[in-house]
Length: 327
Image 1 (cartoon, rainbow, N blue to C red):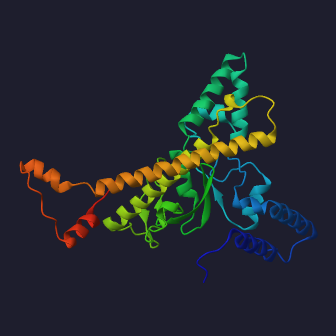
Image 2: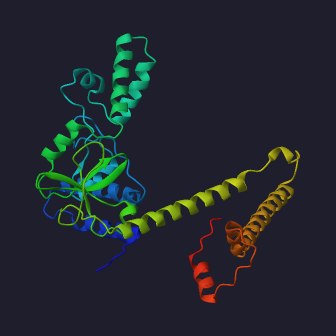
């Protein structure tokens, strides 16, 4: 019945689950092996908050180089998949990649480039082209293998682009759990179909029905909120960059740390004072614009020199309400 759970609580729950999942009736050798694996898993469990180091191999959707991080998935009995596979029908790529993991393939490419053997150079070029052409870390052969390997209704983890996603299979179709913050207010967006390597899947609700179109007004407000957040972030970054732009050529050599700190503080105060002055000037301009004699302008347009009678206070309020000034 909790709507929010902290990372610390989640790590605690996972640790308790690993301890409780310890097999009961096993041999002494199996028990010692399990306890060692459990100790290794506990040591790296905190990395789940930042990211685990997994190294794919291009020969199978469940083939990874064995690392201590993989123990966590084994102990929790959670299948780990990826779809970055070499098409076995392309012989030159199969030969170039071989049984290498990603890290090994990168080292091989570097080594082949430095070789004087033309065949090795060509092989390294083919391997490098494979990595460049499959930068999305998913191939159509891998997608087909994934669809065949994942069982109907199975909950598993899908690794792609250094990101872990919850994946399941419903009526023969793969779906990824939507966790992007941009969909935080879209309550009916729960799953995204995984049916091509380009990443443009269909969004579905919790029952795997296509997401009904959102209310246009809600979508517009969401877009405006995002624009406002982006604008504020841009201003913050710009201000931070301005604070860091110090003319070091004007600082004399041999200056003490205390004097340097004073100069930096003076520069920061100067920028802050300039910023507030600009804000005050902008506010004054706004007042001038709002107080401008628009009736006089209208009189010039009509060719009349008569003063326009003052409008009722209600109309003035309405005009002020509807006026919009861009700073």
